[in-house]
Image (tube, rainbow, N blue to C red; front, side, top):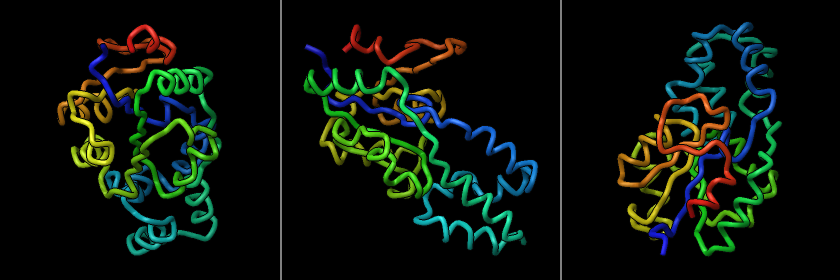
Length: 204
């Protein structure tokens, strides 16, 4: 019998691909500059802010920018051109059929609140933890502990799957959760890892 009761996924670059975001980021960096973007993100604290308006107002108190630049920032934060990977739905269905609880932990700004419904995976997710809602972001312990608390699962009974060694793998391990890297391009020297979600059917 498998020891896991809860399977936790990262969202972007694990279950879904945010198409065109890198191009939009490059456009914004060329317009505002990397230093300004870093200031706007505020070491990830943007993920803890409850609305785009609040994020814009905080940024405006630190730096002058035009209405056109504000429009670009809002487009960037609210970027929604996200599509599921081909193996996502099949994998989520498999896990639910096997009786696993399924959760998502994601570092995301307020615009991601309805993303699961938009992607059509709400019915497969028991718990979704977004950084802006809980005021903590991966790899901080609090966001993982929030997920465990909501599901009532012991850390030893959970498995985290994500594409970031720092945020997903190390963050999970720091609270006693086993972790599995997904490296879709098979370029990261790390074990244990998978290169597509279908491989989970051989593991779980």
